[in-house]
Image (tube, rainbow, N blue to C red; front, side, top):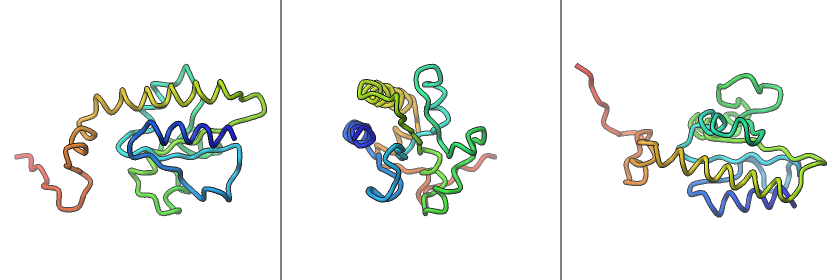
Length: 138
């Protein structure tokens, strides 16, 4: 129930967010969510002293490259780079979940407010879309 509470909070507060993986056949203590147009490393830096959050599996926690598991599931490199893994344990409380979701929502909001890529995306310009004009440096 805490995982579902966390995900519901994130999905209702953040535009262009989704759950990675099967919604029913998964661990009940782990949430893996993707947030469009964010860099998980930058978000985790903002949260480093507040909550424990990861962008990959526990066995590759020191590796900043996109999760090979998420890539093999069909996510693009950008989607994998914007994904987060949140694990809950026996000591996790509902208040912990509310605090973690609030802090994550705030960090993503701050990041997006400073992001030219997000601003362009919201104007209908997607720099990752095929056909986007390339800028040539002379």
